Image (cartoon, rainbow, N blue to C red; front, side, top):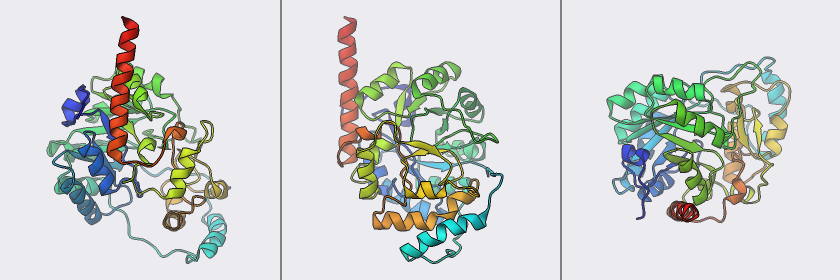
Length: 362
């Protein structure tokens, strides 16, 4: 197995400086997590919304198939983000016709309260997870548990100030999430006007590398080997991949979502609060359009109001009514293929790109 040696790989005990983004809600199956770890990267579960028992079972299953390679987990720390003018009745009026068309009860039956980030981390560590990652906030609430277990703590940030705060709170690795990245913007706080900073990956990575003394991981718009090589040239110790691994055969991603990724234009993805109440990047569809109305609520209430519709749509392969999280380079995703093949392609492509650059320097 061809490897690339960086401070990140040495810290985490992996051979390739590639992290699977902790994409909650289905994409990070035990099979995908194990496949990425077996291929020399770090497979990471997205645990948000799960309970402790399901977390323990999923992590245990991945570890059983990871050939003793490390497995990580990701939790979301975000406190509530209220939204002025929120109107649950207005949301009900929008969602009732959708539920009727899909044969779902309205209102949906109440679900169990999700576990706290600390409860999820403790369950994952008990199952054998070796790395803890966080997003959307200050990691202090789980830092002690991670370090007591000897697990490196990875924290995703979107600004230089948050990177410094992350290291002060105990981060051993910082993921610099550029504006190009799919999914939720990982700002520690969301300002009252909900206009979060959108710093591009190259600009952010270079400044974060100068600002902190821990390994930095680049995220956002990285889909292939040259992208990894570019991140390393900027001073990053590795990359975090989300969109690129949504087309892995092991990912829990419906065919309709995969097809939208492959045909996405560079200017198609949008930052929206409609689906969760926090700014996040994805491909627009009928659900985002329907929820972009007065009365939409903040995080996490807005995330919960249409959860049953998104689950039913995913089960039915209905790309119009699920969350189509994706970054700006989604069109480079390519065909469905095993996760190990994607990791091989990116590693080999990065090595070739660096050789070509070395030839230019000669």
